[in-house]
Length: 174
Image 1 (cartoon, rainbow, N blue to C red):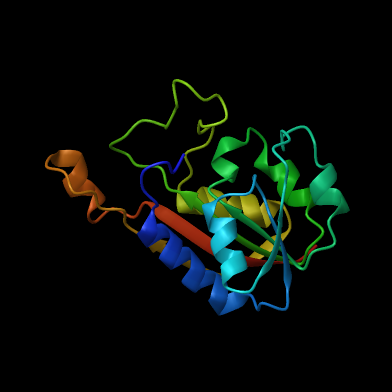
Image 2: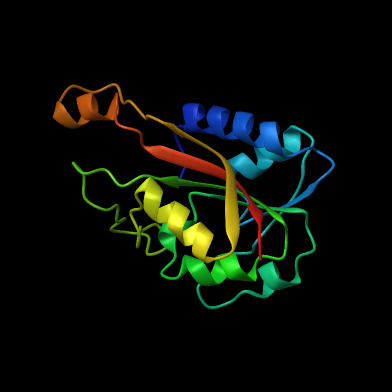
């Protein structure tokens, strides 16, 4: 996925948000396979384990059996058909999660070559908030940011001021 470039702005914003809420003494289960950002978390002193590529819509074993303090999910929930079920299975009391926001001027993302790289959900912030609330989480902090691209056109212009990413820190209330 990141063969040529890293999403540096997203990684910087995500790390800054994570450091605001999670200490390096807390253990993390990062949903999704090991990736460049899980490596960045480890480089910053976090103890991170990842899920192994199982279909999280059908297999909750890693999540249910985890005894970590925190679960992170960076750009994961939009790929799941039923993220509610995953959110209910989390045993940790803290969650840091981010999603790409639905863009009214762009269709839902779908890779033509990789069936795992597709968005079933294109959330608006209020939809993600509602999902978390229904699944037993209370949002304690949130942030949004844009993702401008260095291209000419209407969509690139809209990306310069339309928030693209939404991140939350939540605590379990159930």
